Image (cartoon, rainbow, N blue to C red; front, side):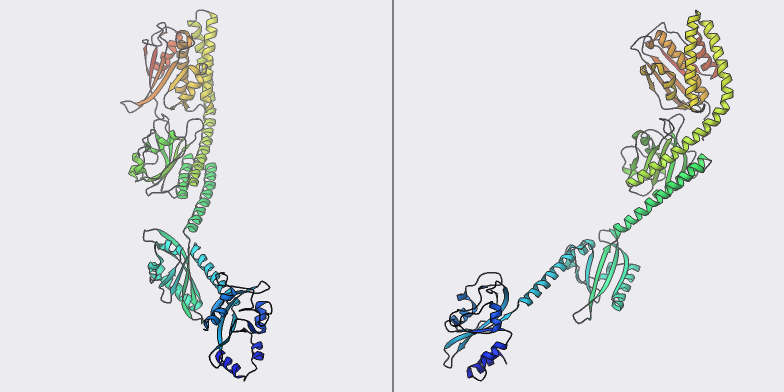
Length: 634
């Protein structure tokens, strides 16, 4: 029975109205034409939290009334009051009523006028439906939907909704970014499967079919965006049912694996490099041949850094080039024969001067140095290089890796290259120590006799050319000390090749602060270095008597260069320039003293060299040797 029929029956007196109304679960109350409450049922009392006074309480039994937005509504402007004032029913008005206990409830009211038989207004009846639970459920659902939308939009995964044909219905922000789509509406209607090519499209179709059959499917694919960016994705396709549980479409959650894969690959590279270092260390310790050890190390280096070309360049004895001693990826026949310059025209030469690792991203646009012909001939674009330390201040050489494609090197790659260089340096020191021991044992017997003979000869000649015994004692003592310092310097390396820079600093140690050295860090055979040490001593003695070292302010400049000669050999040019003009200085090439004769014997007789002397504007001596053939490489 609807409400109108119920009221008609009530008016006719055919139903015990109050009894029936008291049993209904809906709050119902009535007023007279003036708005005074004349009836209410128990659900109304529950809603209002109090019993109104019949015939006194006006319009409504609640404490306060509000619109849904919280705006207060006076009782005389409530729907019941309006219904009575206008003599018209009010339908489905939502309000918030506050009971006398302070509780608030959402309600929907429907006040209707009650008229007599003559049509006159007798009062009104109002039904109040409590919709609080419904509104809370709706609010919870709305919050849940908002939360879901927030998750969807803030997710770092690409989330797409497809229809059963695989056409996009919606896509989140991450998906738009990944697909390089400015407006999500542009994606609606596109086929999801058309994003994939070849075998990966087949995999996407198979995953969708698996979702139809089992509820979900999965595959991994590589996607190329419109701009050409390549990314790797993990795709999970799930069936989306409708309210009846029937298939309605698909939900696709795509996760970008590009950085994860890159990190995994990077970790694998680092582990491979650590393993390579371990293997290189074992090779350096166990391989008897230094040459083979170098070759095995550069092969491992090339593989570990992913560069097809790797090389070890050894500093030449004359400090004018770097020789390719070991390598991989170079044209046949170059290893052991090719060389590069040590100046800034080459990456290796620049590395020697840079004092640290050198990384080249693109040799074609490099401005720090020119690309040497060796790299240009092999189409090198990217690379890195580092100095290999030597057993002294003189470096062993340069270690480098190169690629014909553009390559980015990480800090860990540079650290790895430095570690390999240190392994090579350690093996080189071991090699030098072994050579020194062997050579020293061989030379001890030979050199000890020669040194005693030389000392005896120098002693006799010093006595012969000295004016008295005291001068002879002082001069011989100085010459013997110079021989000792020279011998100590050369013997320190096992009577092996010695650096001219080191030799000059040790032999001329008493005058170190007043000497300027100018020349590349040339290394020469031990025998020649010993003789040069004696020559420098005699020249310094001459300067101490008559030149720069005789006073407090003069200085000597010592120079040396290595130049090619017409016969294909190399010449060593030594220069000694005294800053003091002293006409009394002896002429080593023409004088009559023993020092002069000793220099002449060593240069002209023993080494077939030449001596030239100038006394103006200051004293200078120029000595020229033809260097012996290069010793075989270790």
